[in-house]
Structure formats: C-alpha cells, structure tokens
Length: 505
Image 1 (cartoon, rainbow, N blue to C red):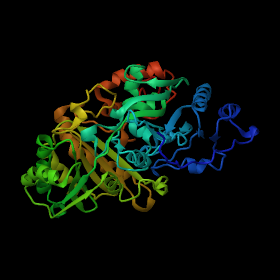
Image 2 (spheres, rainbow, N blue to C red; image 1 turned 180 degrees about the horizontal axis):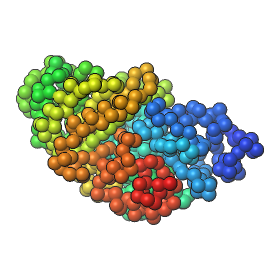
Image 3 (cartoon, one colour; image 1 turned 90 degrees about the horizontal axis):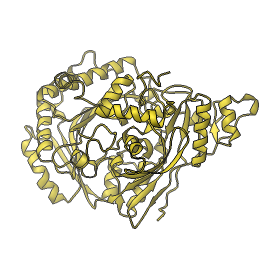
Image 4 (tube, rainbow, N blue to C red; image 1 turned 90 degrees about the vertical axis):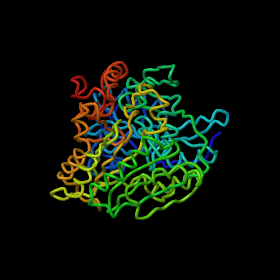
C-alpha cells in the first residue's frame, strides 16, 4: 500500500564544462551521474552545514536517483582515491554528513525518500532520505508507528543506523531494533538487496550501530507497531531549586529510584536543566487514570514538591507535534535551519551516585568563569524497570553500543543568533561532562561511561570515540571493516578503523 507523501526535492545539478573538470568529475560525468562540483551554483546550498560551527568543502555532492548511480559513484571515488560520506538528512552534529573534513565525495540521498507500508505484514519500506515527521504522519494514517527521535526533520538513514532513541523506545526499542531487512550498496559498489539476520548477517549486525562505516543503505524494511491511542504528557517544575545543588540532587535521586524500581515501559522520563529551568518531564502511553496510578509512587518519593505540575492528554500525533516544539511534522521550512553548537554525551548502565549528582549541579551553579555559551543538560531514561532496550534485545544483537544504558545524557551548548562559537565553550562543556562522569569513570574504569553516536562529539579522538560508542563490540567491527571496506572508502574522522593505523591517511 503506497501512502502519499511528496519529499522536498532539489533540481538535479548540471555538470561543469569539460575543460574545467577534475579527474573525479570527469568520471562522474562520463557515467551521467548528477553531481554538484564546487563551481556549480547548487554547491553552496548543498554544503550548508546543520552545525554552522563545522563547515566543510566536499569534492562534489552526488544526488543519485537510483542504486546504479551510487554504485558507479563509489567506483569513481575508489579510482580517484577519494573518500566517501553519506548524507540522509544532514543532521550530523560533527558534519560527518559533509565528510568531517574537506574534499570528500558526498552521496546525498534526498531522492531516496519513499515511504510505503504493507497492510498484510505491517512492514514499512522507507528510504534513508525520508524524514521522521513525514514518516510518522504517513504511518499514522494507517494506525502504525515506529520508535524514533523527536525532531521531525532528521533523516532516517543516519538515525536508524546509529540507534534512534525516542519517547516510545522503552516499550518498543530503538529505530534500529525494528529493522528486519535492508538494501545497501557496499564500498566496492555491490548492491545487496536482502541484508537480514540470516542473509549477510555480519553486515546486518555492523550496519545497525555503525552504518556510516559499512555501506550505503538505500531502503529499510522496518516492523511497525500499532500507534498508541493516547499519551499523557507531564512536566513537574523544580526551578526554584536552581542553585541548591543538594536539593536538585535529591530530586534526581528520587526520580532515579523510581526509574530503577518502578517505571513501566510505557513511560518516557526525562530530567532537564537549562534556560533557567529544572524539570522532570516525559510522557505516559496510556489513559489518564493509568498515568495517575503509575506516577503516584514517584510523587511520593520526591523530597520537595514541584512548584508547578502540568499534565496534558493527547493523541499520538498530538504528542509528536508537542515534542517537536509544537511545529507541524511536515514543516519543510525547518529542514535547512541549523545551529552553531557543540554537544557532549554520556551513557551509563549504572545509577548516578548522589555524590556525582551533587558535584554536577554544584558545578553548573558555581563554575568560574561563568559559561561562555548557552547550554542545557538532558537526562533521558533508557533502562530501568520494564524497559525493553536491554531486557528484550541481547547486548550483541547489533553493533549499537548503548543497549545497556540506564541513562543517556546530552550536554548541548550553542551560541545565539549564529554567533561564532568560542573555543572556551568546548573547554567549559568538557568541565560539565567531567563534573558528572569523572567520579563514575574513575571508580568504574574505562568502559564504565560511554557515549551516544547520534550525539557525535568531534572533540573526541577516534580511539576514545570507538571505545565510548561501541564498547566491547569494536574489535569485531574492525574485522568486518576489513572484509566489507578494506580500502577505507567510507570514511569520517571517527569511522571504524580510523586511528588504528590502517585507514588514517
């Protein structure tokens, strides 16, 4: 069953005059592959980064319309010693979808954005260039849904191949957990139409967690779920506690106890601080009466009552719009809107000790010098009582490394009005991370604190990135990289194998 949605398309660029072409451009032109070289008027808008702090200048942007063009472009890149990066929605925090460095060849998959649903199997077939908002709208028209993030303009490709956490993940898993099959093109240009747990199983494992290093996925087949009929959104505000580190830590500790002991899979739970607010927020997928019974133990544990409590019921799509800053899910005006920012993240399977929480909140209120950037901290509950993320999926079911996390934390900072991001901001955010994670890592060892690859941190060197993103699965990833991309064609500064003396130059 084809469900209607028209993706935002860009006119295919024209090739430059023959006399001015580079050898790579001549190869692409010879094979009639649509591309935008630096001399093209299409090049500037196509290379506008989502993170304005990290602009890069690719060798060219490919806008393929079929798998043959992708395969041939990979052959051209290999022949002319050019590294390749893939862009689906272009939301890479580190601009890896522009290569993460200059002179890469970019495969822009915006034309691979179809969305269809089988009424008999409830399997959705979706292109990597489709964005989360239109995906949700299309599936909801048939009463179906997928677990995915909250930002409607994120492209499916990178999101699904590196995790894909959202406010239904504790009951459904991440986006990559719903993948049953993929069509992908390997670094050598080979098209594989049926990559599953039983066919090309090693590649299926690698693509689900480290996809940017292993292939160009051109279609996902994903098992959908029945869309929830009702959601109860809640926000409990504790902003009067700002500056009182002990009181803030005590509230968090109460939330954490509830999360570990009682939070059901139908509950998404978040603690956040930023812009003068300290809040416990989330959504419960069920009725208001069921929510009231479920949240009661948490409210009884709180050492301080919230200053205000906001509870709002709504349907599935109403909730998604609310999570999307009350912006329509098909609003294409946001696609090219970026930010000037730097983000760090951490994942941990352990509960935060009260001492770490107190140190963290004290650091936020007493840091000297004061923050040179605007910032906020978001703690998302992954695990806890009833969460399927670790309990229903084995830790080695995919190369995704955050499976056993209790919390995943995003520490986001930016400059307003697109002002230049100061180097002092990166140092400051490193101090924020250290205030929260330092004690835990010193006590738990090098593998005790991870990071979420969809919140990619370009300040990490490749070896640290590999350890934090992939944990104990990284050795297997290197072996598979040698098998599927021995030449290191699919590359970014933190790609599998970089820093190991094989694909560094």
